[in-house]
Amino acid sequence: MNTVILNLENVGITDDQFYSLCQVNPHWNLEINKQGELMIMPPIGGISGNREANLIADLTIWNRQKKLGIVFSSSTIFCLPNGGKRSPDVAYIKLENWQKLTLQDQEKLPPICPDFVMELGSKTDSLKPLQEKMQEYLDSGLQLGWLINPQSQQVEIYRPNQAVEILSLPATLSGENILPEFVLNLPIYN
Image (tube, rainbow, N blue to C red; front, side, top):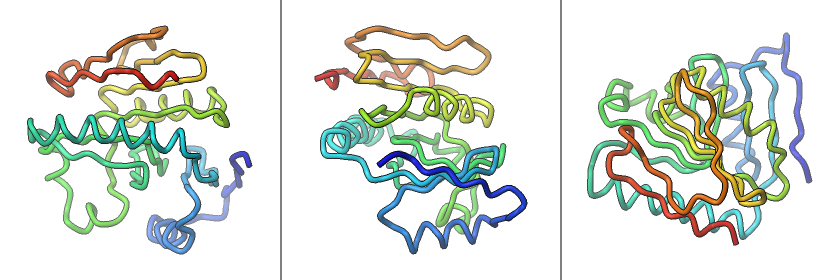
């Protein structure tokens, strides 16, 4: 099954209503892009789920040592400043940015753009919507983003005010100054 896109133009859905919609439909990944389109995505398969879990684990292990921020799974939906409600496969927010939010904001759909995201393409994903999603994060304040595409064996690196950098078959990725000393090994192409 492919992603289903519903136009919500002139319908209006509040953050609380969207949160409730997500709660009563836990088997679907729901997002709203900055154009106000509701995207209904099917669950991912085993290979992609395992790859995603490994990416989260690597970032979590680093973060437990550094204690610099908060790591989030793909189940977390962020209300971006540009109006989108997005759920990256892996997200990270610097501790000082997370602590600026109220407890109520932290509990539901945090109204913040992550400082860092990873999106992992699967066999059923089209590249263009993922690239548009990465641009949406950048437009909302993202500091570093990785779009990992195992099918093409490429990684696209997104940084503010810079052209997208495309790497073919990189062995590692650096967290740069956003994730100091974090290095991701990329054995996920198989």
